[in-house]
Image (cartoon, rainbow, N blue to C red; front, side, top):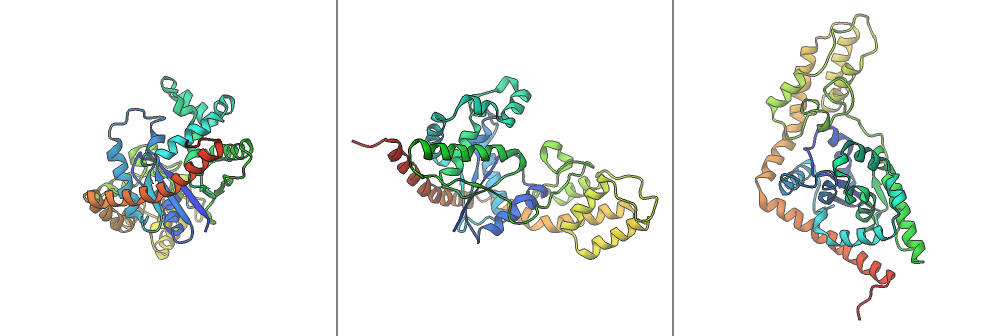
Length: 331
């Protein structure tokens, strides 16, 4: 069975964009692959070196991913910092990484420009840490977005370099994983772009939002004055609302409002009210599980402990073998 690995940043809450973009697929993958999902708390320090409540953020992320359907008995869900072996492999990889290649990474240059007061060594060596995360479990496949493709390519470079330098075909060369289907891209409520916390609180519907908040956000969604000609093309802001409608509402509801738009009879207030109620119906079971898990420290601790134990078994084996290959041997 192939091994798939994906990281989760302990910043921000899960929203509909996250859910339909990846998490829904993670849940399906549990039964088909040997899955490792980790909360990247080390990574978060590259841009937030003094987090306000790192432990609380990690706990919330654990609760939300468990509530969304990740099963610690099926997949290995763990916290990155629970595996000291990752830091050791990160060190080994840094010994064979070159300043020039690290400085050319697009995301490093972008973040260095945006945060010139915090261009730290961790930001520079982010690709080495990401590579350690992946190859510590000898992952075959890694789900990555556009912004991470260069990092995955560097992981392949580091794996090949290790194999070449130590003359042993040890690490597999991980490949990008696209879930085998077209991902649903959920737009934001501000009329353009993608759904995300970085775009503003009102842009995203979080799985933990209560009904009152959801109704308020949806009713404030950007619209226009309405169609003036039958069957005219929907502007981006309106198309965005219909995109969300298609993933949370029944087909007949979508058809009803589509017909209303095409006949110039649509009332955006009615569309928003229906959309809000359908989002609430979709998210409510997950929200209730999030609340329950957030208040159950024992359940969160048990899930983290199970994940750490399973992940450590894999990581310890890799580090033991890597040390042997490099030449670190006990006397």
